[in-house]
Structures are given as C-alpha cells and as structure tokens.
Amino acid sequence: MRFSLVLGISLLFIFSCEKNIDPKFQRAFGSIPDYSWVFPEEEIRIIRIKIGIENWEKIQRDMEMRIARKFGSQTAIPGVTPLKASVLDAVPGDPIYVKAEVTQGDFTWKNVGFRLKGNASLNSSWRSGIYKLPFKIQFDEFEDQHKEIKNQRFFGFRELSFSPSFGDNTFMKEKLLTSLFRKNGVLACKVANYKVYIDFGQGSKYCGVYQVIESVVEHLVNNQIGKEVGNVYKPESSFQSFNLAEFEKQNNKTLADYEDVKQFVSVLNSNLRLSNKAQWKKDLELIFDVKSFLRYLAVNNTVGNWDGYGQITHNYFLLNVDQKLNYLPYDMNLSFQMKGGNNRTALTFEMKEVANQWPLIRYLIDDPEYYSFYKAAVKDFIDRDFNPSNLSEYLRKQKAILQPNFEGSEAEKPPYSHLSAVSNFSKSIVDLEKYINERYVATLDFVKQ
Image (cartoon, rainbow, N blue to C red; front, side, top):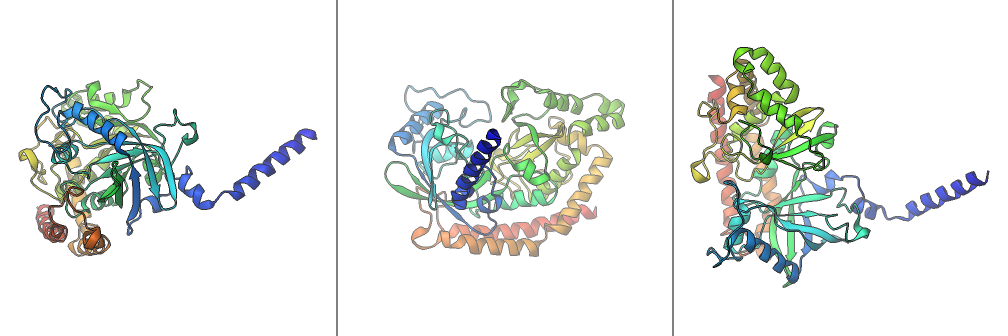
C-alpha cells in the first residue's frame, strides 16, 4: 500500500512537471524528428552560428595541415607537407570539430560540434578565401565534456549538413533531384534552404543561402519506408573487388561486421553471371535492391549527372535495410549537366560506354530483363515527373521563394558567396529550364527506340 502511494505521488509529480514544459521547447530540443519544420518545402529558415576567433583559428591551423594552404591562398605554405590523400580527396581526412553556438529563433543550442566538410567544394572555397564554406553541425558532439547537452537535438535531429550550392547558381538542383528520386522509389535525403549567418570572430556575417541536407544514418529510412536501418557505408569503390579501406562505416563502427557488403561484391562479380545467369540474379537480388538501383539509373541518366558512380567512385551510400543493401545517391549540386570537370560526361541512356570497371552498371544493363526494366522506368519517369510544364512550374515557385535573398541589402556578396554576380541566379534558372526541355526531347527519342 505504501509503495503504491509513493509510486502514485511520483508519477503525479512527473506528469505535472511535463505539463509545465513549454511545447515549443520540447519541439525544438526533443528527440522526435520534425521533418515538416526542419525541411520545409516552400519556406527558408534562418540559422545563426557563432564560432568565435579562437575556434576559427583552430579550423585554419587544421586546414593548413591538411592542404598546406592558408585561407584565401593558392600558394603552398613553405615547408608544410600536406597530409597524404587518396586520388579522389582534395582535402585529406575529416576536418576537426570545434565548439559553436547555434541559434534559431528564440532557441540556442550550446557546445554544438561544427566542422568543415566536402572535397572539391571545400578545397576551392578555402583557396579562394570564400567564407561560404561547406560544413556540418553535430548537436551532441561534445556531450562527453558537457553532460548537460547529452543527446542534444535540433527539432529531433542530431546532425545536419550544410552545402553552399557550390557550382549551382540556381540553388535548386540538390533539392529538386532528391525529390525526384524519392518519387521514383529511390532513397534520398531531404533537403531544405536556410539563410545562414556565421560569426567567425568579427561579428555575424551573412553567408547566404545554403542547402541543409539530412543525415543518412538517423531517421531517413524509417521516415521514408517505415523500417530500421542497419549498416550504413559511404564507399569509394567501383565494386570490382572488396577492399575494406574503400567502405567507410557511418554507424555500428564498434562492430567489425562487413559481411553484407562483402557478400554483395562477391555475388556481383561471381562467375555465375556467365554460367548460370538465373542463379546469379537470384543471389544478387537477395543481397541488393536491384530494381531500386535501376530506377536510380533511369532518373540519373535522364537529368544528367556526371558526378556519380560510373564516372567517379564516390557520392553515394549503401544502406542495409532488412538484410538487403540499398543504393542512395548523394551530393547532387552538379547534376542537370551532361559535361563536367576533368573531362567527365554524364552517362548516355544506353550506357554502352560503361566498361566492366563499373560492374554494378555494366553487368546489370547487359541483362535483357534488367535493361527492359530500366528503360520502362525511364518512360515512367518522363510520363509522370520529368514533364517540362510541371518542372517549369516548380522552378517558378522556387524562384519566387528564393528571389528576395538575391536582392537589395540581403543579397549574397563575395567573399560570403560563390556568385560572381547576383544576376547569375536568375540567368541560371533560365538555362536550367532550357536544359530540362532539351533532355525531355532526348528522353522521348530514347524510349521510342
């Protein structure tokens, strides 16, 4: 009886305390992911970040060690040897985290982890002295040092990635293409536009509009298909063979379990592909979502994207969902282009130019059944989503939302922008609309063959 009374009083106390918590505070700092707020479709959020001079200097020293360049300099620092990098890495390794303060509206998150991210975009921005740097923030990065921020969240999210629209003067491509992927049954991150102000130690500076991208390892899978995610990898592999160093784990790091991706690479390259095609396909489909990848190719080849698998061995993730790996495309600011850097070109619809060094494309497309599915997916995509009139309306709406941020006193300006002129924003949208119409015509020709 006494135990029941004590328990009842305790529960009453807990519930009465919960009632006194401001619902807005719960929403901002709680663990429930608020997708509609963090990733609005037709709004631009404002976020303010305070790094401070001491931490900005730490970031500079770290970057100087990595690439042997001072901020704003193309010339190597005498006597400094940059860290060893892979062929693909313009910036070796992950830059350091420093403590920052993040404010959104009436709420402030303290001791947040802030670090630079990116590869070509970071390297180019750094050498050019452009403060609109790509970065990510992790809200509980320093929880071991500050117990009061344990499991700190931003409207339910632990981590957010901020891309500066490098190479994309429309400020739309990342958001548009991820949306098109999701509509066609391909897992893809949610994206939203944010106005970002950063204090590097000399007062708050307007760094323009960023695309905020959700973390792959958090709520993405559960939100999009209602399932839990297993191992998540960010590979730098063409899948010709398994090399542990090429499959960086994003979660479950304490478990040395790579059997899923090992099996995938093994099955993909199995001799059964030639001796027993039916068995090879059955085995492959047990470990990898083949049809989702073919739908990815349908969308990707239609819009044109030279910065992905088939040309370069990164810009994608592999996610284990229900013991089956899924391909997730990533980093799409350079999409909607047929030609790009280092003489790379987007894949043609037929993909005849793709050699065996890209087995995940070559081996699948060589199979008549898979190729037929892919071609049907291309037709379905243009019939339903890649329609010039619908996309023109999308561009018009998004331009109306973004336009005020490229006018008057709030317009992006160097050295806090990658725009050489604000007029490039409107011009690039006209160019994108023209490009979409050209790709639509090319796609119609392909599906009629």
